[in-house]
Image (cartoon, rainbow, N blue to C red):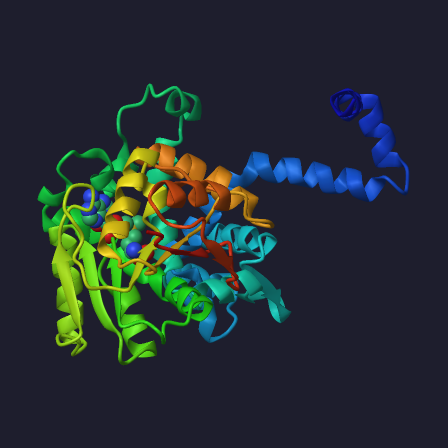
Length: 369
Ligand SMILES: C[S@@+](CC[C@H](N)C(=O)[O-])C[C@H]1O[C@@H](n2cnc3c(N)ncnc32)[C@H](O)[C@@H]1O
């Protein structure tokens, strides 16, 4: 019955007569305009992203941050011709990145100001150039007809049988991107899950150690262990030493798909790691965490999830295609993570509220017997 009603709706929506009628009538006009705009935005999304990339590459937001500027000044500071500077400013203004000010000048828009306050976004936007190159033929990508592309090269552990052998120059670019984007995530996780009752936290796939450094600051008595590939663990250990954490924090070099995790933690965190891997590998990681924890020990899984209310495109559209281009993994729903947790010997886990579920959700699970 519902299918028949929806089929009728779809036929109406597709009819040009209905579309004209909906755009004419005062009570349907706002809906028709909203739908037309949504459809156009989907068609034009790539153009919007490239406008943003141009702003970032030309450091437009830094240029405008001090005080609003006339297009001629922006031209001078970015090396664009006056006409090109004006074109970029108008495009960026239409997207809320910059805003027109009195006297024909432009200042930061709401989105441009927010972007400037988050230094991780510049590198993130820059590295999307790799993703967009890989997405040129999305159908070939879906059919598995494309060889590994630029994004797979950026995340080399996703496509090798021997990730532990990756040299330093293979891991530094992605570790720097992760480190730059970790501070917001760390605050979300640490606010969602107070760690005062724990003695020792093991961060699996902990990257260059930014999350553990934030946990160390928040919980001064907590001991810290990190597990990551050898070349990444070296970056983390250097950070811990530099921060004077040598007595509290140790980075373990290992391949978590093969090697046992270190024992001794009563809390394990896995932050932005599971979505990189297919189900069999996720199960192996969770089982390794299970073995490393005592009975009753806690596991925190933190990452952006599929089906997040209000952020559905992030999990299923963005990460769905991002991870396809990267070569492994997928965004999972809370229920899917819960099933994998249970298969590894944890309880189903409970979701802890975060302020920005678009960035990360947090699931806390306990090791059963
Ligand atoms: C997406 S990054 C997340 C890093 C960090 N947790 C964060 O949120 O910033 C995934 C991490 O998993 C690590 N990793 C991937 N495969 C691994 C493996 N087989 N063994 C150990 N670490 C691995 C990578 O080196 C990387 O640091």
